[in-house]
Image (cartoon, rainbow, N blue to C red; front, top):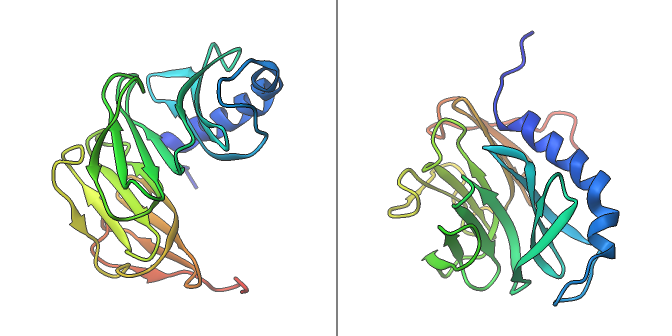
Length: 198
């Protein structure tokens, strides 16, 4: 069985690089203090040596495979992140909705508010296509970089804890309802919870 190519191998590589480079991160000076607690990891899709980690102390960017770290944003209730390009970064928060940076994390604008954004996933086929899971408000999608949003039926009102997207296949993890899979970009959904326990 052939495995699909896309962001998944890149994410696995990012995780390995972070595990290798994290001692350097912990030894570095940070204006917000240090933390061993990581909430999210992503990698620049155009440069696998550039990492982004969301920690208890805030969002950090790791250059050269994590040998040099820069604080991009203090914690500020950040719970998820997704990197579309070297300049475009999406940040989900528990209190301030969804933020977007178009200058590599230097500044942020709110593109969706009012809902705690717990998980993010960028469609490998389009950097403008973003999936956002929320706490109690289901799953949402934008195809224009956050200009307009569509609520995804079938996942409405659920607390989404994780989202993965690959070639039209969308996997969604939820709190209390298990895992859902769509093979048509979110139009129809099927529970795939056989073998899972509470």
